[in-house]
Image (cartoon, rainbow, N blue to C red; front, side, top):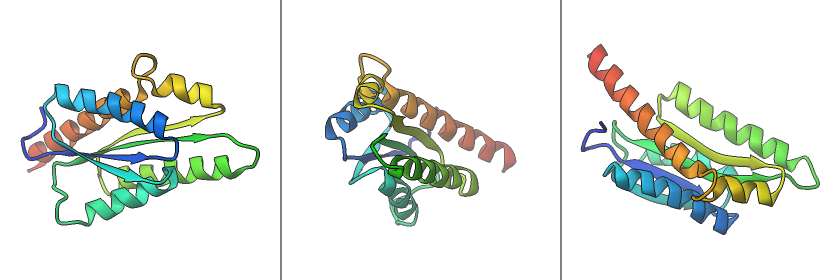
Length: 151
């Protein structure tokens, strides 16, 4: 179980607002069910998610038991911009998780079409926001357990 001092920061890219709302609804439902406090942080797009996480970890409000849920969507277009954004956002989030030992639930959808993204975001379908919340909470638990075992 997550300690009372731990909270989750939901960093949500708002570029596709309807999809962001569905992803956040799924994540918030999981956190509410577990009575886990959270703070929502809105950023313009997926590219800004890693920077927002890094800025938050540098702030005085970030606690040792805290974690993040990264929510957003990148949809393939006519250029290779999609490939660059997907690769760099994924790599930056992985670096934060592995190099900085930050619990992160990955809920950034990388889809070929808007319809694929809609199905994955919808709380009554794939509900990827909820999956990212579960992953974040599990990694927070693991970090707390290992911290206790190593202390």
